Image 1 (tube, rainbow, N blue to C red):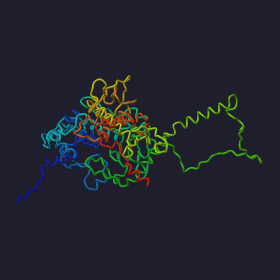
Image 2 (image 1 turned 90 degrees about the horizontal axis):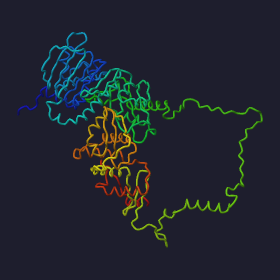
Image 3 (image 1 turned 90 degrees about the vertical axis):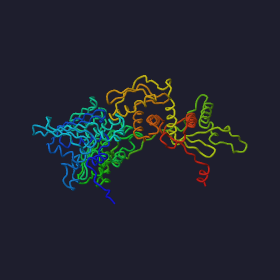
Image 4 (image 1 turned 135 degrees about the vertical axis):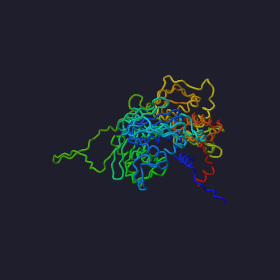
Length: 597
């Protein structure tokens, strides 16, 4: 039998490796910008065309490369960061695997111009799909300029599955934010199709956060500063009262490297427990410094998942640090139980002078109803009191089964009552129906939004337009779904890369303040799973219905409960929300009887 196992060509191996490291244009941005930081640059410029599909260009003033280094940098596992396995546990740079440039060159057309400051001429290298097309001297500024053109040009299937321009640009903005926040000492600039998205001068951490997220954020920041033998925690946490309903302002960094860490996120949210508004997420920009040997950053190709040696202890330190900061700035009461609490109570020093408690004179003969017509006045008061507190008491106890009494309820009359400000309960033949009021309203609004296609009452104009500042990532998300959002009845226009001006709202939605509703809508949309069979419009309608539905805790009147009941069962799918969560449940009589045995 002939041998069937063979070695893959380097070009194919590089394309396979690229599938792990280079998933979309934002992956290229991350790798190239991290290389610029590692090169010691203090000025980094990112230029994007067509959301990275046509061009991704990173220009820096770092150390640059010699001709030999420039050529070797595109070979797999060629790196200046490590020389032995032990170096993996003392890494302080961003990149170290030596896979990024080889992977990028395998799936794009690459042009590199680089020069060291102590040389007169630089090096130009052109690579198309791992094939070196040119290597020659050139004139260029000190540092490096990487131009990545036509990403995935040689893998049509990968290019076809890229998302819309606005989606890809949103991911690029997020990667840019992570690196810019980690290095406030570096000047960063981001341009997209010749429009300046960010121009961030070098500064401190607070200035950088304000530069990325706007001036309002500067007023919401509470500083953290905790030093221990295990970890140093610094940075900022946002004021709980200004917490938003959307993710996007939550950042963890360890040794200036961005990381995802749901476990540590829970430490922050628990520290803010009971002081956060309902269904909001605190903002935070937290920087941790640990011994490089106590973490493992080599567990994922993108290096954003990091394993800690003692996560539980760091969790406790982090939560204590946030709590201490909130207490220090009077966000929550802070009590120091380690110090003595002395209360100075003056005591008389005159011999024989015993303190006497104060006396209150009471006229026990006083009658508030005394005087003219006192008897009739008293009787009228008692009559009104009894009428107010006892009228219709018999309705609390249906007398249908009492001998000689007839029920005041007509046959088929429905009765509703609310439980915990969250559920609507209604007796039915088989038992007791429990309806989740928020989920029921979501289903009702979802179908109303999808059916509301007529031009007459599609949108309700606002008397005064509302301007809302957006995170640039959310700005590109709105642009991505703008057409489907307009179809629901939203009327708005986008101004610059960080503002939306709302001029009209969907008819039939009771929205008093568009700002929190928009935040909730963005969060619902980003977290709801995509269903290719339903399309974007259904996803937009579902997110809008969830954001506009009545909240838990809202007290409903009887006619409101009746109306919700009737409208819910007129829906095509009353049993489930648009995302498949149950709306109602019936507790049958057999279960009730079993519980009362």
